Image 1 (cartoon, rainbow, N blue to C red):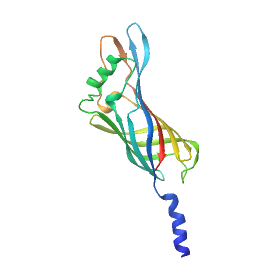
Image 2 (cartoon, helix red, strand yellow; image 1 turned 120 degrees about the horizontal axis):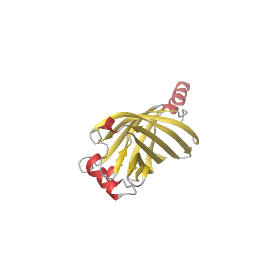
Image 3 (cartoon, helix red, strand yellow; image 1 turned 90 degrees about the vertical axis):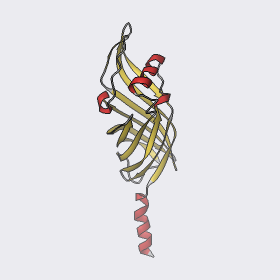
Image 4 (cartoon, rainbow, N blue to C red; image 1 turned 180 degrees about the horizontal axis):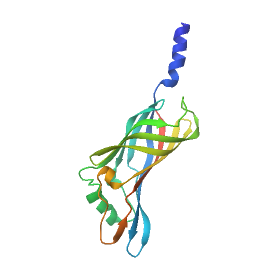
Length: 186
């Protein structure tokens, strides 16, 4: 009997803990230079984020989905161009992220506290999947976890074409993605 109790005590911290998205926002940022405006950041956001993750030690499984058709910036023409040309959302309406590893969290997972994290996983945009590393922080508060993450990469990493339109003088070859998620333990 004592053996069974010790086995359970040793196994409990290693059991997977699951979380689901309660709310979230995903953003892209791209530096652009516009005629008559100058250099600025194009920022598009969406709250069409769903997903779940299970953590066991540093190992992670799950999937997060962003509906790219819902991305909005301050320019409707930019949004239309992005949907029709760069992202081709009629053929590829969603982006997915499948986490594989989360570094920086204590084990067992805490009830409270803020921790710098690094999340490694596979990001799929259009029909291209690449491993990416997100940097950020996770803040635990009881059953809730707030996560803020960011990553960046050049357009060609996902075979995306940089926008080229007459009012646009240049677009930096770097896409920055950011996500803010509120997760709840399942």
